[in-house]
Amino acid sequence: MGASAGFTLLADAVTAAQSFVTVFATVYTLVIFAYVITSWLRLPYSPSLNRIQRFLYDVCEPYLRLFRRALPSTGPLDLSPMLAVFVLWGLEYLVNWILGRFA
Image 1 (cartoon, rainbow, N blue to C red):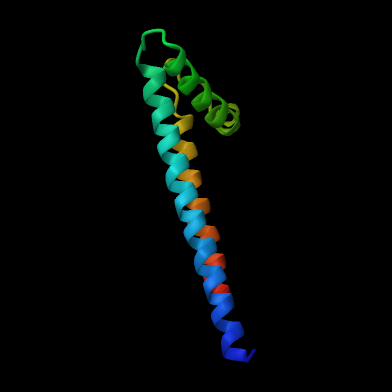
Image 2: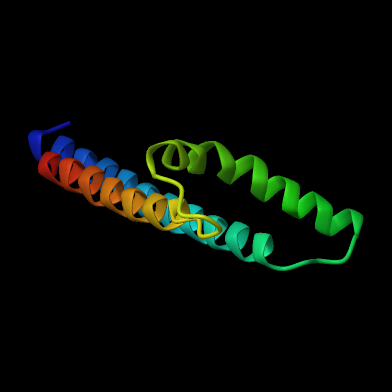
């Protein structure tokens, strides 16, 4: 295995890691948006809808709780999802930039 083969293997690994980070951030952003929308709507009781809402709550709430503690209370308006998405996008950019330095 020559040096160029090792470099190609490293570049492939970095590209795969960058793709994973981008897809993860995109999917998690969509999950946060779905959580916000389902929190605004009053959905009829259904076991399947209840499972979906519970899944969204379990996945999003621990991350959003970090920002709810840091932000001051603004009454009925919750800005933590917006800040959480911006931080997620910033982390995505930072991780992809760091990984790009290896390739």
